[in-house]
Length: 100
Image (cartoon, rainbow, N blue to C red; front, top):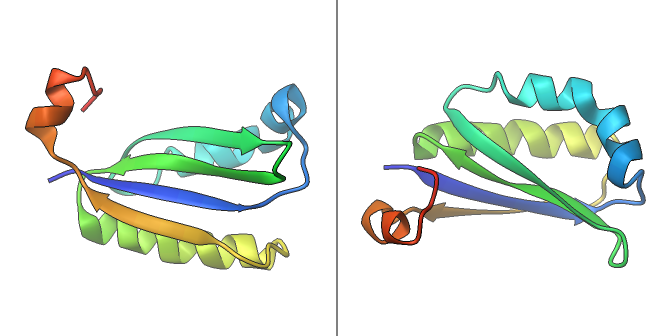
């Protein structure tokens, strides 16, 4: 069963194209994570937050990624990382055109 991971954390930028330019290497690294189906990058400059929505093939892959990514972000000086895991109801999601 697919598992959705929601992550957010305080972030002071860069934003928009500058974020894209600065974090392409990280994005390519994340694309290689075991069990990752896709990630949507999120940013909210007004609130000073960034993060992502991820879809993993299974809960162990999502949990392993969350632990690794939390440690990586804390190593970058991020004081708080919020992560939530959700089971995906594939049948209802398909009705609403989810890219599963």
